[in-house]
Length: 318
Ligand code: F6P
Image 1 (cartoon, rainbow, N blue to C red):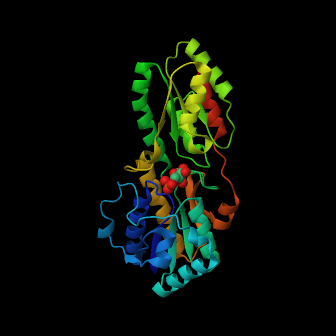
Image 2: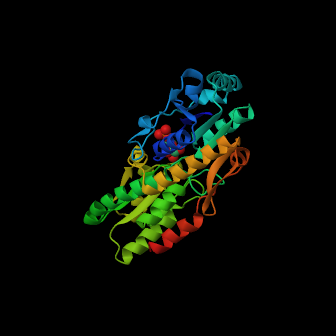
């Protein structure tokens, strides 16, 4: 079969590991493997490139995506999707893997509905894709944040300061919660649950009274800006509060072993499914194994952040 792969939306560490696994596994089963550059945009404005075992050498350990990626808003238009479907037919592609987050999986769903044989692989540092317990990139991003906060902690401790650290998560607080729990943050602010500055300030004052001389607030970008949070907290506590935006440092760098392993397992399953003629599904991590679920179900559902982890983090930091 002619099998193709593309990466779409925000990049996530582990995308390259998934591309490598797709190619090596596909070639092992005598398929021809193709890469589509720049996500869905490449379907209408690009050309597929043949991917060989050698062309995916030494990418297992790199972040980003060798295929490049894009947020291609034109893909919302039915005529643009029709052009993409036409291109896939012209190129003789028998199966396409789309690696990406919620927006990309919606695009994959629409293109599949129009007739393209597609399998989705969940990838987003936000880990906010419904009906899968894991999305590629999350573990690396959490570890990137932990590494940064561990460094900031040294200076926070030396100066006895409050630090507000803004992490990614425009519409989701899962990344902030996991990082906050892993770093012992005193407070975590997320878009899905309102926070109260007075209550956070009370908590920080209480920990100060017990002898804690530095503290951390982790704020997901969708819950507010670190600068504003720092100002509000400094005003209420009378303590100095510094702020840091970690930005894209969270999304780059070598994928963790967990992301590399999950990438291999997801891509392996995706190749199996395409070879068996299955499409219109997303591979996923579920109850300790890898299986798949219709894209239609994924698009319709929402993934809740682990609010119990948020509560636990705040109890443990008292
Ligand atoms: O989808 C992942 C994500 O990292 C979000 O948390 C964030 O809001 C967004 O991507 C930022 O994307 P970009 O850097 O492409 O604007």
